[in-house]
Image (cartoon, rainbow, N blue to C red; front, side, top):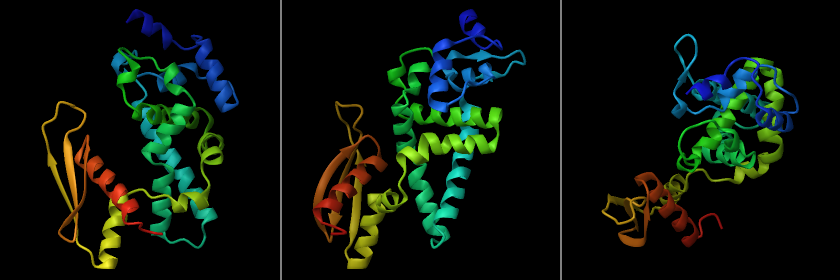
Length: 241
């Protein structure tokens, strides 16, 4: 714990993290302890001199809100013909957990996380969490306008093409249900928890179309099993073609 405590003292150098931040942000942060916090997992369980826990979670909350604001403003300016519902759907696609996780992984942010235990056990969400915390740190140190440029640099410019985003499907289940309503088809998801030797697979979903079982899949959660079933049904039924 004494080792970890030294990391957060203001002015303490962490050459690897500083070099990484300069390479992806384009500037060398001055508030070193702030960025150390952005790369600190709660498992370290360290507190500041006021007795408050030091980890990236508060910065993650802030960064999430800033990214939402930057993306919402971008969509408002670029998609003048789209209504509120379409803008909301577009924003959801751009700031989806999967997309932020992918970007965080591509930037190799996990390599610089301070934590206890095996990093591989955190799951993919940790990548998006660190990315949001990093954006939160930039917002605090540099303000909104500079932070906006960073969101464009890390997220929007290299990864987002609005025309392509419009074509993306967030929920195959929603699309399948809408298709059923339009085509007057009865769509049912019969999903049950099951016992399995594989502890990561806990649910089985049978997808029924007009009283006939179209397919059966398994997944780690009810939501994932049903989404997996809907995606397969989308392809089998050739929806949208």
